[in-house]
Length: 250
Image (cartoon, rainbow, N blue to C red):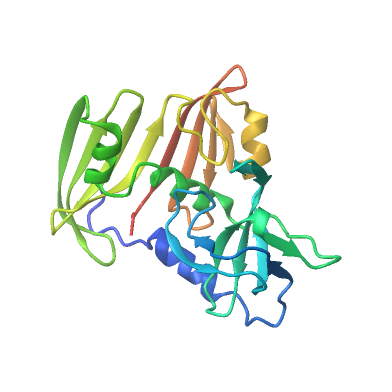
């Protein structure tokens, strides 16, 4: 992966903030929370960062629903993208969301952003967390980066760690902290939103919708800005490799 001098991009976190800020005031609450201590997460997965929690009876506005369902504690449901009194959008497991009569949730906008962030955070966002979860890498390579700027901090190097069935890339910041920016899965051991290596092209389309392009056995997805991407290498209609990448981990 080549580095670009003075690259100026927005982080996924900033993109999510823009999404949240674009949500109108809460004049259209259309659902009720049905449990106590229901967690609000940044991505639709139990590995997501917890923003906070809400209790039974809280009114929320549902802005979208994932194209997949997940089974948690014996309950199977999709995730809803909601906002509430604090004007911050977050994901809630569908078991705890009761839509008002006559209301149907629209498909989640730009699902690729949330899909990529879920995958990148699968083992933690910092290099130390990933090594803690996956063990010592089989190999490590590093590329020096001179005068590389993300828009809010400088990068000194790119580091690539190869594990048994995962390869992860990190941006090394001025303070020495390494944040994950890309990850490749070559095994079905780590599903993301229920998708994993071995699934079909139809499965990917069901979860993420139509791809941006399909060429040379690769299905490619990107958010509207083009800074967050997912690609799926295929063979005979089955997924052989999943690669997730963002220009800036935030």
